[in-house]
Image (cartoon, rainbow, N blue to C red; front, side, top):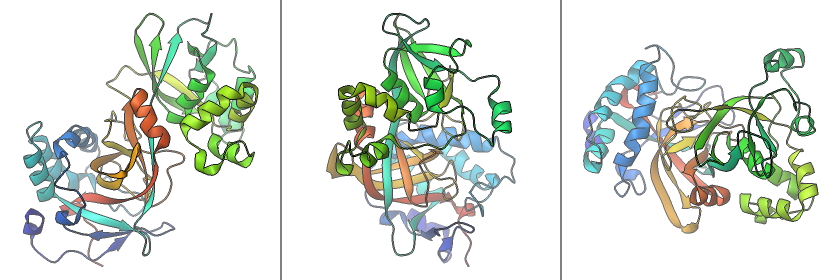
Length: 367
C-alpha cells in the first residue's frame, strides 16, 4: 500500500542501453517481492548507510548507473538516503516503511528469463608471521614500485602468477607477510582481501592494492578440463582436498591462473568493495556495474548454500564487483569471515533472481 501512495501510473519497462544481452527492469510493488515481509530489513541499514555516505560525496550530477545511467544521478538518491539515516537501529517495521516510501523495486529480466547465477565469497582467514621461518614460507606481496611502468610497456600486463611463484620477486623486500599455507594464499588472491591471524595472536587485515593485469582463469575449470574433478563435484572444499592429495600437481595447476593480486594492510573496519565502503556480511553483494548501480539495494531470491531446499530471500546492497561477476543477472554474496562463511561461500552456486531498488526520482522513465 505504501509503495502505491506515490501516485501516477507506474513507468513502462526500461532497458539498459548499450549492453548485450539486454537487461529489462520492470517496476513492481513491494508485495510482489517474495519473502519481503519476512526479512529483517533493519539489518541491511548499516550497509545502505555506508553506500549513502559514499553517494553523498559524489558530485550531484554524477550518473549512478552503468552505461545509460539507469540509477539516475547522485542527487536523486539524497532524499532517500536522508530518510534512511533517520531510521532507528533495529526497527524492522520503520526500515521497511521508509524503504517502501522512497524506493521502487524493479524485476530484472533478460528476454523472458528472470534468473541468473548466484555464487558466494568471503574474507579469507590465514595464519601468518612478519618474518619468514619455520612453517611460514608462503609470501604475500605488496605493490611493486615498477608495476604500472611495466604494465604500460607490456600491454597492461605484469609478471604472471607462475613467474612470481618461480621467485621473480624474491629478495626485493615486497613481502608484507609470510603465511603457513600457499593454498590459503591462493584463495586470498581469489577473494581479494582477508584476515591474517599472526603468530603473536594479533589480526592483520589485508586489502586489494593492485594486480598484474592478467585475466582470471578458474582453477576449478582447469581441474575439470584436465579430468581431475567432475564438473558437478567442484567446490572450494573439493579443490582444496584435491590439492592436499596432489601437492606437486596442485602448485602447477594454481599457476594456470595467470592473475596475481598485490595487497596492502587495511586498518579500516573491514574489507572494502569496489564502491569504496566496508562490506557487511550477509548484506553486501558483488554485481556487474554495467547493469546494476553500485550502492543500489537489491532484493535477492535464491537458496541457502548449506540447505538448498531453503529459500534465501534478503535485502542486499550492490557494493562490490568481481572479474568473474559479469552479466545482467549475476550476483556474488558476501558471507563474512571464518569457517562458516568459507563453507557457505565455497558451495554457493545456485540459480536465483534479483530485484533492483531505485529511488523514485531515479526510476527509469516511461518509454
